[in-house]
Image (cartoon, rainbow, N blue to C red; front, side, top):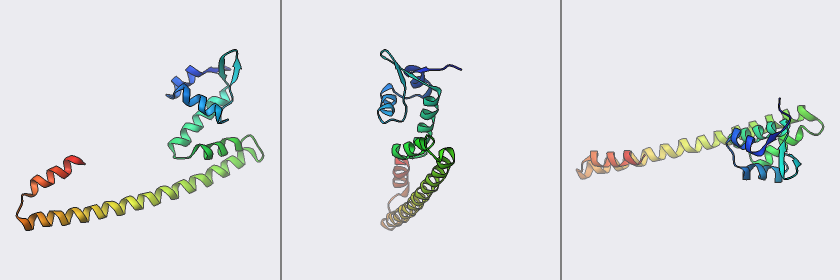
Length: 139
C-alpha cells in the first residue's frame, strides 16, 4: 500500500477537481502533509474524501459530514460516530419522505388540472390529440 497520494491521483480517482480537494483542506476535512510545494495525502485522507463524497450523495451538508468525520477523532470515537450517523440518517430519511409526499401531492394536483383541461377541450369540440401531444413532448 502506498503511504501517500498526490492531489492529481486523488482528483483522478474520485472525479473531483483540485479546487474541490483544496476546499476540503481549507475546511479542515483533510489534512495533507506538505513536501515543498506538493500536497501529499495519507490513506486516512483518502478514506475521508470517500466518506465526504458518499455523504454528499446522500444529501448531507458539509457541516454534517464534518461532525460525523471528526467524531471519530474524539471520545467516544467510533461508537459516537456511528450513533451520530444513525441519527443523521433517520433525519435525512424523514426529510426525503416528506419531499416524496409533497411530490406525490403535486403530481396528483397536476393530474387534476390536466383532466380539467382535457374535459374543457372536449367541451369546445377541439382535437385532443394536438393538445395531448404537446403536453407529452414537454415532459
